[in-house]
Length: 357
Image 1 (spheres, one colour):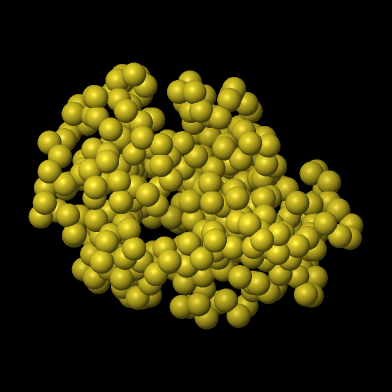
Image 2 (image 1 turned 120 degrees about the vertical axis):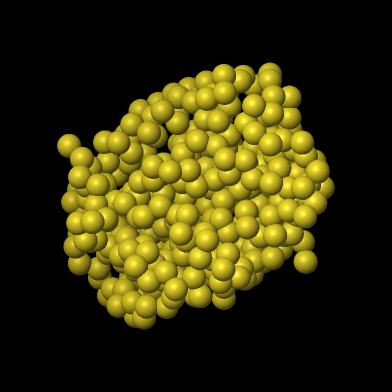
């Protein structure tokens, strides 16, 4: 089976995206229109602490779905989850937000920058910080690339609105390379595997478990992973402004954040159960590969202050703007809703908090 179709969520993602086009988009938009009725919250109004009965959210956070189902915590959510759509790539989430098909999603720091550039008002409501790289540069089968200095002149898979794109740009900037020094092949990240397999690109940034699946299949043909120091520092929850202006949905988003944060802690502290539930049963990798992936993953860390996250986001805005993507630089604080600041950190034990001034 081709590496691009190994995971069941990939198939489910395609089904969701199919529903977001044509007539399906109209239906989904109509279903999500309940956020337009009733009283509205202004951007500086306090988020209610009580979730009204009958409130529902569509949540595109697949790992949290697995974690909450595995632990049984899903039944404790004080709202209804109408759907757990498997939509992960930033541009796809933006499309789903526009179609009112998703209320809250998880991504890296770059999709909110793209959303801002395209006029979509959406805000970051929770932050997890990482200080170690989570992506590596996978090479095409038979490629002669063995180190970062070999990237000059090569075809590099690039997704401007996704974490992988930021990793590429920060890597090239670290090497002192400019746009003219490489060939950036613009693709959506789900297309990276096919592009590598067919040698349409020389290298593509891959994260886990996709990287392991790819190397298991093509390592014998000379594919390898080249380490880059570029860090994709943010894992976020974010939501459209229409959701956060709805008092009931905003309260539900606030209530979901602690469940999301504690679920990351549970996965870290219960590695065997998490490996079995997610990597083996859901992602279809071996238990041994799952353990290697988990052991190489950073401990979840939630900042009490978002200052460092906003600083990293600003640096990213400046980098992508310098390379000609998403227009002129803007104030990174514009994509953060600081009414939610500290909610995630307060929900987890002190060992998982990053205290910042």
